[in-house]
Image (cartoon, rainbow, N blue to C red):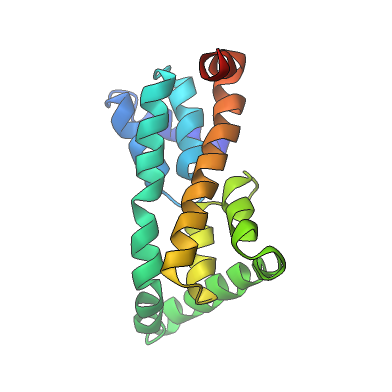
Length: 167
């Protein structure tokens, strides 16, 4: 992930740093985690970076929760796209055991603990595929994004962040 973030930071070096971290936070895999790492590398002040990255990470979630099934159904009409959707569904559903075991809090932890293959996008996709109602999945994903923000804030901004929060 650091290689991708460094490439993005170098590619968009002349761009507004806030716009760069916002765009990074919108993308699956990178999300808020990648946005905060890029923000630290680009020396964006912590509070500004956190707000931008959280907004960027949250924006795609309602669209995934509400529309992904219809989009997948449409994509399955095409051979190559259908194979990709089947691959994505299979890969995502392999992670369902945490949700099945822990329910709401399983989804929170799945989204919030920064491990490869987890995050808001995957959590929303998993919730949609498992047909977890939006009223239940959206808060879990939101709390998970906040947990990821806290963990990644400490990792990227370190002790000064901790002191500013608990000062």
